[in-house]
Length: 213
Image (cartoon, rainbow, N blue to C red; front, side, top):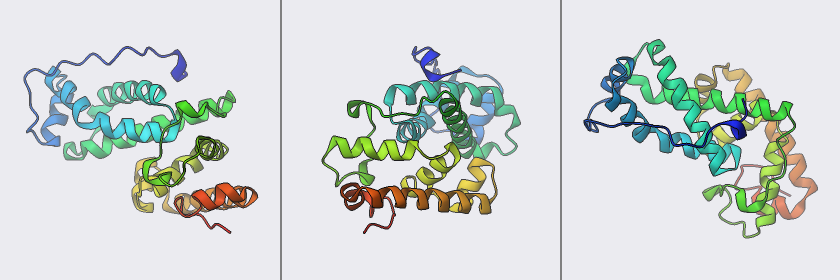
């Protein structure tokens, strides 16, 4: 189901009593027990992480919020499969990445990965801090959207989220060699596209870790 067809109603969560001082392992146990405080605390603790990642990948705050609703729904459904309760953060992050991958594949199949209005685009912060033109920002998203879902996710996780190859492999449930191949493929394509647009290449080549001429 596409993000556009999902409800934008905020996830209904009740955080009573407050358990902000509990460890992730105890929080995971509360989720397994379907306790309301655990459901609420999971959102408070991990939603910012999921929202930032989703907005950077999807380029839209509303879409990121919709995807977060799905991510935490999946977390609640799958938490019983978590073997190490202390690894709850990694568990949530992995589900977020897999949900994003599915969303990108769905959009690609429907040809929905396209140019967005610059006003709706996410600011990459440190990646685009030297870019003043909204047109250039739009071009960055357009280039990233031309990559395959896997290549785009790998590139964003490596260059923007600064994750290691090992971390990406675990989070995406793929081999390290696949991560390296995907990153190389994305880098080669982006380098070629940047070289075809000197203005964009000069503005963004260094920040994205790409070779600029």
